[in-house]
Image (cartoon, rainbow, N blue to C red; front, side, top):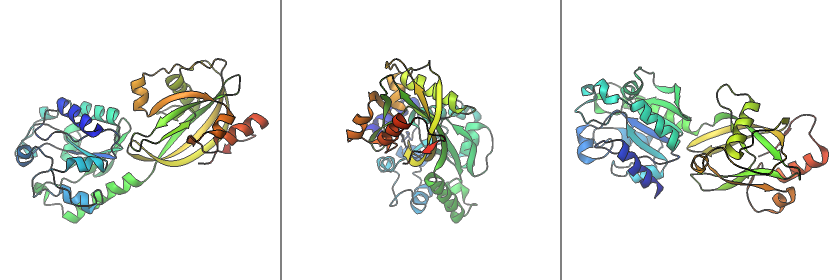
Length: 338
């Protein structure tokens, strides 16, 4: 099982009495501060029966029933994982030293970059402060790790009894709401046509559902990028295409979808790119392409797309391409549909 493979790999990198529960593409990873004596003895997270973590998960709607600390595999199947900010077991978090958090920010950065959780939720302000050296407010943070947004929850420890249970539940429910609210993502895509008017499509495989679909090359704009810069970067990475003049912006599309644990509302612009050579040599390794969800590419004719039973995005791709071939670029960008 992939979840177990990831679990074993993570355990080897983080020597803790309560080993990580991690897997690719989780909706969220909960990050506690460190294992207490009860958790260390059981080898499980939040194992102290006086800790409200598992009850809060259930009452906030993360789990369909109250899970026991030993049911980590079930939590993974629901799309959630657990790690800690520090590995050393102590009687209480006040016994931790600054050195216990050495390298913790870099480790969580690797978790975010390699496993792509939608969010990392710190269970307690001290867990966040231990990692980043700054005291946060509760809720969504301005800081990000790779594509994962960060959220700070109240501590669920019995030592945090000064914060009423209802207040802690309110913040757990706020996290659940944020996970279900689509995040805006702006993207640029290229309609790459060769001399025979074939279109280059790449196949994406959703790592959670396994569903595949064909789409034009492209992806989200990085910080500070223009649409043209994003198109050039994405084509170099996904197809090894670097020499071309960017044609007109002809289509736009907005759709909501779940990808790598996050609910996204993506706004896309499609630009025409003409190439002379059909050769495709991605600039990224196969491993990195698979991490991005890419699973191959090929050139298609419009008729082949129209006859195919495969999934395409946009769904009306064949008719859109046919209209472009017959009528040329529209006077203004048209909506490409779902």
